[in-house]
Amino acid sequence: MSEPIVFISHFRIREGKLDSLKQQIQKVTEQIKANKPGTVVFLQYLNEAGTELSIIHVFPDAESFDRHSEGVQERAKAAFETIALTRREVYGMPSDQALAMTRPPDGSGVSFRLMSQLADGYIRFI
Image (cartoon, rainbow, N blue to C red; front, side, top):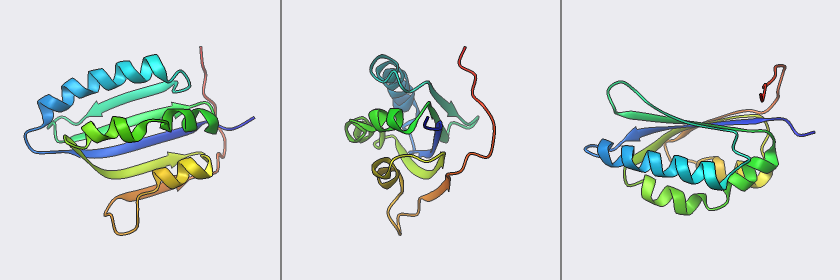
């Protein structure tokens, strides 16, 4: 059995774009919930100042992460008008394809962290 994957993205909200982002957040959440059943957790958090956004995804396995990634370029296009990627974290080992897509290009200024080995723990799906 494949191990779970936790994927966290951190963004800076572009100046004057918070209201637009809040509208996008609701739309994206509805789309993910309806079209990506393997994405078992999809949470978006804003900092108190409204200048940063973090998105947390949890997938039961690497295959679910791959399915979630389908169409991500289209979903991200509108988002990047309101946010700029600053950091990505992956916990667990995604497929080579998902890892390549998730890892920022060298020199991009985006930090990346891969914690590929699950030491212990559990996720309770109730």
